[in-house]
Image (cartoon, rainbow, N blue to C red):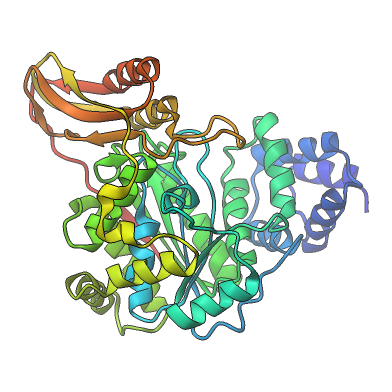
Length: 434
């Protein structure tokens, strides 16, 4: 088999065989195919696309390129949840305690934040002592005993995806639906999930800004899951404004705790219940999605979800006392209100800019080696459709450097567009693909 022939075949719009895709992924992972030839193939795929069958084969080939986690020692149906990323998205901190309180085994691999989006692991490390670097034995034991464990992705999880993504990043081939979908799903498959629930964000703070693009990605990922024998559902949700009110690690953790106490923002609770309901249903802990939702609400009302969070944090070395005394989380030195000097209704928020403003405070990574300041961020007071009066606060900023705060506040304010007229608020759940 020759790489030249595969490039020519795809360039002409023809379908690559299962054997051809498996061969190129295996050989590229081993380093026997040069980057320039794979770049040519990626560009051909970018323009010619891939069939569902090709995309499924590519996904499984990338999943099999490294470690395939064996979760067979974990009792029950393992359901994984994945978000395509956004601003203020702390749903994993809310969903996983709720579903595990109903006996659903949560064996989750999560990542760190990069750029304008936050990462679950960074948020969890707000608890002093918390570690995601646990052994496989501890990981499995925790899931079997308390029904929940979250670990960082292993270095050898889908290594083909890591190599291909790095190449896509520098060859302008990132935004191709089959390549995006196979990248996400290869890691979910390698992580050992029996069923997968996806939160596909769309809007000004999402990777897929246009709703039709998010729908296409969602359908592709559901088809991949179906093709590989996994129950898969994708929920299209709005990211035209931050999710909840908190943006920043400590602040988001505190908001997640309040949500599990029944005092959280409505939008955060709503998307968490939507995602969690499918997880509970697929795990056969409810006879319908509606029944699953009712059971999840009870975990908040009876305190069992909050108790699960305590057990989970303690089991991975964290100080769970912070859950009952969130004032113990370190607070930023500078806390100020962000004021707009005009009156109107909030018409639009460039949500990605809010994420970058938080990064400027030190709350996000510009590179993988950046050190995060867990105490900084924003609490948003006004969102799309809300009225703002001149001199009224639209948010509170938390920072530790005068220079950083001034620059971040300027960027934050520029993200807001006002209108003299009232506007309808955005619908949170755009669509559900099952």
